[in-house]
Image 1 (cartoon, rainbow over the protein chains, first blue to last red):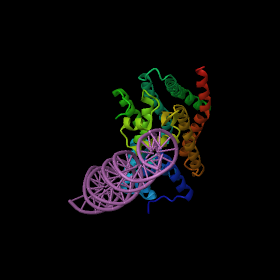
Image 2: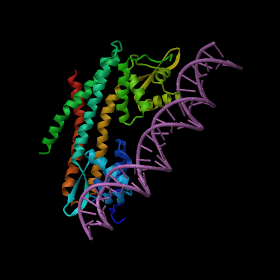
Image 3: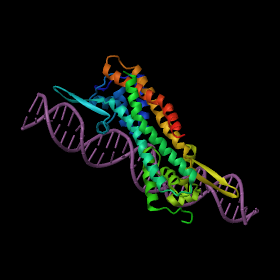
Image 4: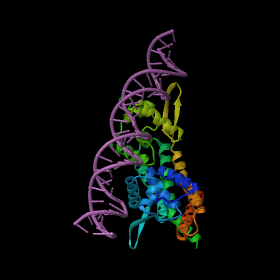
Length: 157
Length: 157
DNA sequence: TTTTTAGTTCTGCAATAACAGAACTAAAAA
DNA sequence: TTTTTAGTTCTGTTATTGCAGAACTAAAAA
């Protein structure tokens, strides 16, 4: 327990709650908790062993979780002179990208819907119209997002 | 095979592709394919056995998939006079709701982020500022969505 | 040169998921 | 009243997930 970070009950609970949310996004439990820990922890830059002992994970689980988060750009690490360890921290800016890419996935759905539409028989009129409306809706939303993003930036300056 | 719907290769491929997308949203494989079938099939209203035989599923898998989709509002069914079967069809309008609720989930994340922020130590200044920026970003986006939705409706009339 | 550090990779297990198939059921039809 | 229909529910199997623990590795330190 020598490396474990001391967390309050509230902090532990936040990690679990955010962890569950992350799991619902498709991440595995251990990965979700590592993500959450690095947002909640009072210290923002933690070593491998600090992550491992605070979350009580095995080395393999810790290693896999960290590497998965590094390759998906959700974590990054820094080093310190004269210190061999890496210090992992949440790449918070990735969350903004995350939100944006969430919207982009919609576009993928719209494309498939459009393909479906194009090969559908013409006699299911109401159905086809509904489908085309949704394609239009998604694409409109997606097209407007950059504007919305710009508007947000301007609203803060 | 007496009840199976005849599908072209293109239609089968679309079902698989859309099926995979649905799986990535967290649906199980069989459920995903039922969803997809009812968007791709030339006939839009299919019976239990038509779904079952077209997708080559067991009765239990078919029953569970259909019921799960009914309770989550993604399917609905109609009946016909003098016919005991139910005819299941995609509730396409649910897709628009789906897109909207996808955005609402973001709000949930923003709330947890905000909670995290409120209990963070004040000395991690840059980190906290980043976090607060993301909360603000998500909430702004979310707040603007109804306007965007209205704008879309007006753009089509 | 040997030992320690900071991880990584391999092996195996326990829990869960996803489904098939069979038994079952309630209502309608015969 | 019996049989059929249109599913539902139960039981068991297989595959996959998610992780622990141990063995391993490459670089640095001693």
